[in-house]
Length: 365
Image (cartoon, rainbow, N blue to C red; front, side, top):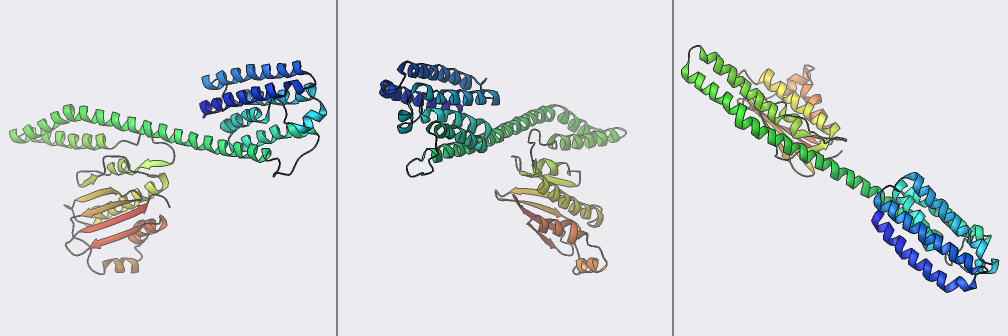
């Protein structure tokens, strides 16, 4: 946007010079008029360099530009007669003075841009000695306010988009780095541990215990490799997949999409808590040998997490009995959380059929 603003600055300078050539002979002091236009050219070149190079993109420089615009416009009173001022726009033209409005809008946003636009327009009223409120004949003030508002909003949107792009780039870089490290660990340490575990069981005897320890460490390292926080995501979002990977154990299998599943942090925390409650129920009630399976599905506008086990299931009427006994863990910890998030919780179970929870939440409440 700064580069586009300098293109506008160039065009406004050409317009101001053309206007100067056309009216300079009509001024009370033509030499003074040429001095004003020379100052316009020099200052425009300085501003263009400052904004394009970047060192001028700060409040002090923009306020200095506004001060220079005010000084040059008010110089009209020194080089032109009152009659000429009453019948013409001020030097070095309103179009060129709008550069200060654009610079302020880019740096300060729509409010700052509109305020500077009001200052620029008040200069013409100060020179003429009256305020023209008839916008049908003088729409310049409306245009100044519209420029400050539109450019300011565009600048805010561009900054937010740039921040989101940087955040996505950091997240992508962290994921790539984690995948690179995972490949190195998989090709090295995990392969050795798997070999030790396998050969230890084959040899038998005292090496069986060593094989078991190697197997446990291999599984723990695998969980550590696939876990990991969402590096660089920051902000108010979290990777649900990374959060749920931490729940993986020898008895809990977690399957998530290859790409990050980003949710609002509050939603992700509540959904993980509901999944954790479902897994706690598996450990407590499904049986000693029961295994649990967690599946995450990214559905664009919603996310669904399925928690299934191969345990004994829930007998018919048992949930109603639990509520009657005052045990409201399912009603509050799982169903209640999903209702609060604007989602839904569906339970499928039966004697000997295991238990399956299907938890669905929208991307945002």
